[in-house]
Image (cartoon, rainbow, N blue to C red; front, side):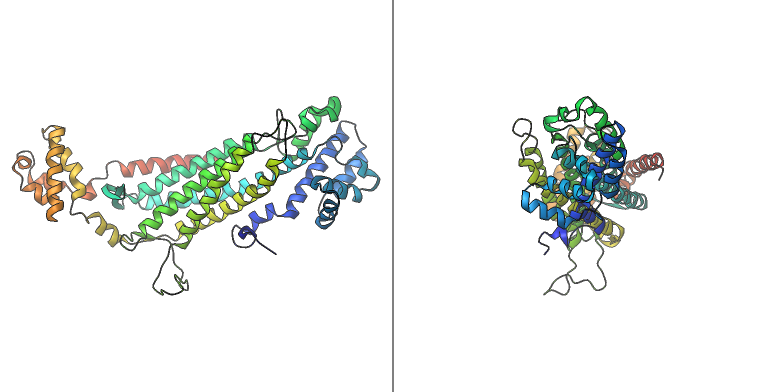
Length: 451
C-alpha cells in the first residue's frame, strides 16, 4: 500500500524507478559484482568466481523478497543482500563482499543512483533553459511595469523577466557539473576507512571498482563517504527548487485577477474549484511553491548528517533513506510542472498595457527628474521638485506629466518635445540588448555542450 505521495502522485515514472527498492537492490548488486571483478584482477579470487558473481548479481537471480526475508531474520540490510547473492552463486558465494564494509556498498550504490537522478534533472533544466530562451527572445520588446516592494517602479520588459530566470537556470547547470566532481564518488575502504581488510591491494581494488562503475574514488573516508558531500547535493537541489519557486511565485502574482498579465495554461476540461465554476487557479505554480518548502527543509537534516560519532554512527542512514528519494522525486515533479507552465504561458497584452499606465505616468517620475538634470537642474533639486509634483498628482488622481507641464520651474528647462518623449515604452534602457547578451551567452553554452 502506497503511503507517501512520491509513490503515486509526484514525480515521473522514470525518476521513481531510480529510487524504487528493486533498482536500489540492483545498484547494490552491481557494486558487489564490481568488487568481485576487482579482486579477480588483482589475483585475490578465481576469475571464474568473479564471472559467476557478476552474472548473478542482478535482480533476476537475487530476489527482493528473499533479501527482505533474510533481513527480517538477521536485522541487517546489506548482509541480507550479501547472503542472498551468496546463495545463488553456490561455491563461488564465499567470495561475495570480500573485505568490504556495508557503506562501501551503500555509498557507492548511492553515487550510482544520484548519477542517474542528476541526468534527469539536467535534461529537464536544459529543456526549461530552451523554453526560457525562446520566451526571452520573443518578449524582449514587450514592455511592462516593473515592481519593487509590490509597488509600481519603472518600466521593464518581459524579456528581462525571462532572461533573469534563464541566467539562473544556467547557473544551476554549472553547479551540477561542478558538483559531480565531488558527489559522484565511491569507496572500497573497509571498516574505519583504512583498507586493512584488503591488505596492500586496497588502493588498487578501490581504483578498479570505481573505474568499472564510472565513478571517482574517494581520496579518504572513515567507513563512510563524508556527508558534507550529500549536504552540498541537497543544497544544490534546494537552490534549484528556489528558482522554480521564484518563477512560480511571479507567475502566480501576475495571474492575480487585479493584474492578470500572464497566466499558466488552463485546460478545456480543467476544473478550478469544486464550488466556484469560474475559477482559474494557478495550481501547478502553487504546487511548485509548496513542494519547494519540503526541499528547503531537507537541507537541515543533511547538514546534521555530517557530524557523526567518531569514525561513524548510523544516525545518517535513516534520514538519507527519506531525504534522497524524496528530494529527487519532488524536484522532478517541480521541474516537469514548470516546463508545462512555461510552455503554455498565456499573455494578456491589453492588461500589460493597462497596468503600465495604471498610475497615470507616476512611473515616469525618474525619467522626468533625469531629463531636468540633463537640461541643467541639479540632481537633488530635481528629485525634490518631482517628488512634490508626484505626490500632488497622486492626491489629485491626475497624470504626472500633465501636472509637470503646469509647473513653472519645470517649464524653464523642458520643452513640449521633452514632455512628448516621456512615455513608458521609451524608458526601458538597454533591456533588449541585455536580453540579447544573455541569449548569446546561453547559445554559446549550448554549442559547447554539443546540443
